[in-house]
Image (cartoon, rainbow, N blue to C red; front, side, top):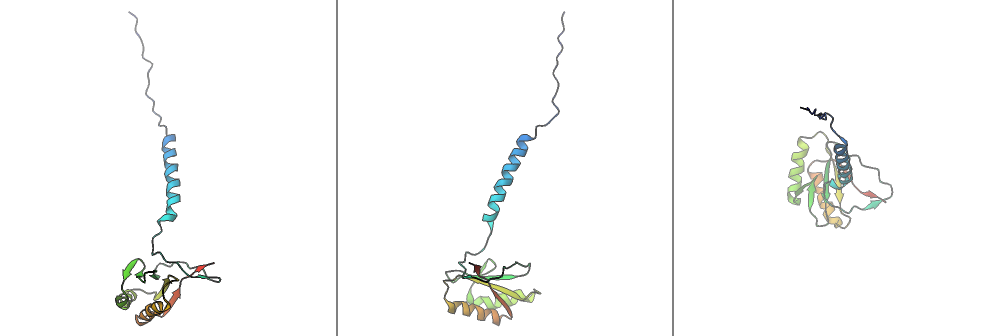
Amino acid sequence: MVSKQNNFSFMSEINVTPFVDVMLVLLIIFMMTANMMQQGVDVNLPKTKKAKTLTKKEATIILSINIKEEIFIDEAKVKLKELKLKLSKIIEIRENREIFLRADKKVPYGFVVKVMAEIKEAGIEKLGMITSSL
């Protein structure tokens, strides 16, 4: 009798090329969508020629007013009559008592002044205005 030998062997290598391809595609997708994932309140800021670039500090409060005259502390919506109380509670626990105000350029000036008065009455002495550069 003739015996046949099987010359089959197991392949012990893993082909990582498809894995690398998938990872590179995912990396590109995440890089492209990262800029679109910035959260915040949509505000059409007034433009200025000589505006210094703002660097967001860890403990900085940003108060925003949108076109509908809605007020937001960072991203939490607040009514005007509750603003003073909420801000005073926030600054009690913070060392940095500075706030930045972002207001849509179409919001009436009188409303912005009312908000600024509430900020002052809450005990905040440093108020910065956020604008966008030309």
